Image 1: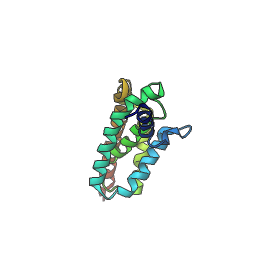
Image 2: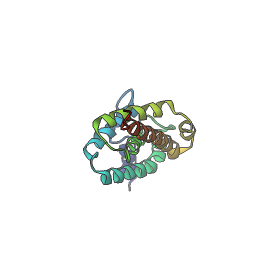
Image 3: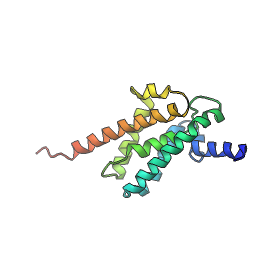
Image 4: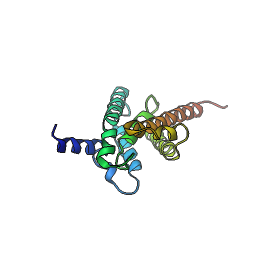
Amino acid sequence: MPMAARKLLIRLLSSFFYVGYLPLIPGTFGSLAAVLLLLPIADNPGLHIVSCLVLLVLGFLVCGPAEKEFGRKDPSRVVIDEVAGIFLSFLFIHPLDTRTILIGFFIFRLFDTLKPYPVSALQNLKGGLGIMLDDVMAAVYTNIVLQAVLRLTSCSFS
């Protein structure tokens, strides 16, 4: 692949089709774009799993080269990690409705922003691993919290 095409592909995928170029809060915009993609497939667990795997693989493949392309560690324009994180946050969550997705979106953004241990430690890893793994861990935390909330709210306390 010619170098110019490779650079374009890295920028396109790592910024999730240029969503990462939106100003001020690109990570939040990336998460929001993921939610908008997740909503139509919420009733299709198979497609959700495949989409999640594709996003994770793409993220791990492009985030390291994206750091070199953008010339800095964990560039703010790289948001494929947030997109993959959102999809992972909702894996095996039922019901996956608008209310649950909205709650999960805010929980994920909270964990991704506050970076509780080991999210903060994972972010310090070099290259694409650091970019992706902190969001993967934030997504795991989000998924655990959502699973607990859904189970607790479905209990009958009468």
